[in-house]
Length: 344
Image (cartoon, rainbow, N blue to C red):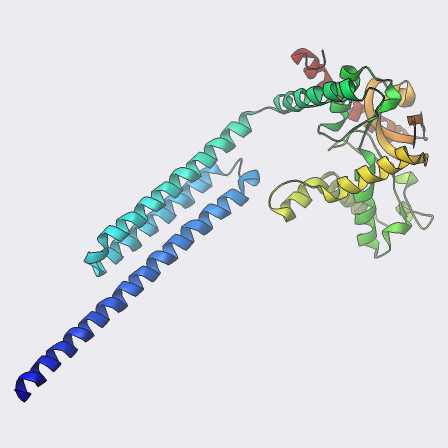
């Protein structure tokens, strides 16, 4: 009996060890599958974060996806060979990978659809939204002042002006305040000085065609052109133009809203408290700066009545030419919106 007990004990121990080895193998395989699942989740997160920058990268993305899928299939096959009893779980992992692939393809399709939208189509879409909002505002608050923030800013101000029927003084756009603040910040960073001592002035359209008036930009009263080289100044101007995109890059998702919020607050305080601040805003021009029938960023006196007057500053020939180019771009968008009848 003792011998029989010993034999049974030995058999039991061997089976227990074999079971332990199988459990270990199962844990290893389970860990591998969990790692694959994590990898798939990371890939999906990466693709979603890079949607805004992936309009022209779909070919590369497909190649990376194919390589990843091939690698995943190879690893799953290896797991299948190591643990035949887990074939069902490995198949499920492959199905999850296939689902992730289909999701990525869906994202790529969305990117393609977005890429096919022209700039004019996007302007028309936003104009339709602005039109609906302004109609409601004028219906319930006919004495209000319209402060426009939506892009393309200057064209949306024109839509709000046409739809509302308000006097031009009561339609104003948040343009140069934001661009000026960004330029002051970049100058401050380049010179290692306080932004409070930097004075800048940016006119024109809110976008790539903005017109910084360098002759009116100073640091503690010192002309900026005496403190920075032309190459450094051009780099700061370009960075100002790309400021919104730079912020979005850091945020990873969404849009810039900190600086626009501060700019809006500055305008609202000047309106509500009648502070009569001189601020660069999108205003309706009727001959000022040689332009007519268009909203464009210029210095204005902002008070309780809205835009109390437009301040005309001396512009060099090249600055006035740049301002006219900026206005022409805004006018082109407005003409396109007229063809869509979004302001009727």
